[in-house]
Image 1 (tube, rainbow, N blue to C red):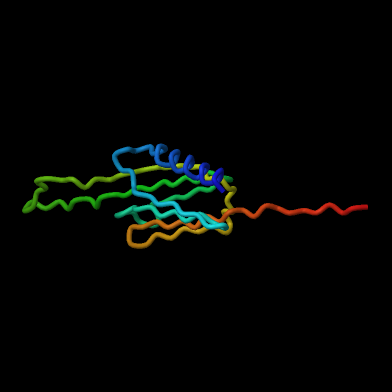
Image 2 (tube, one colour):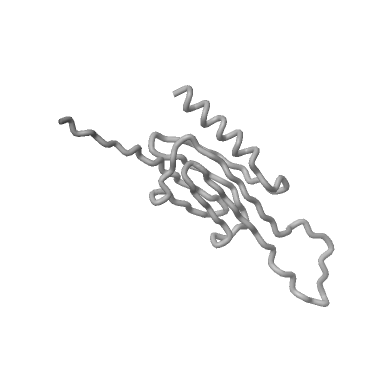
Length: 130
């Protein structure tokens, strides 16, 4: 178990270091059970259609973007100060166990992306003894 914990810690360190946009790095939590990883990521202001999650073996990639609504052209109102802007981020990480992308799922609710990444069961095959 200590080897597996070490691998998870290493994966988490890589995950946190793999951000492509340091201006907008969302907070993340990763938990593990015997059968799956649970990843929770804060993505406020991001619509479901603007999130892409890709699973390739043990590697997980998350990409998201948010857009600010176009300002209305109104002669009576001018923008004096603006902090909100469109943003984009992409993160990738590798977990210790192979993932079953068919059984895994993602849910985006109230600005929180929750991934349930199911570990692939090792194929057990028995040889017939003659």
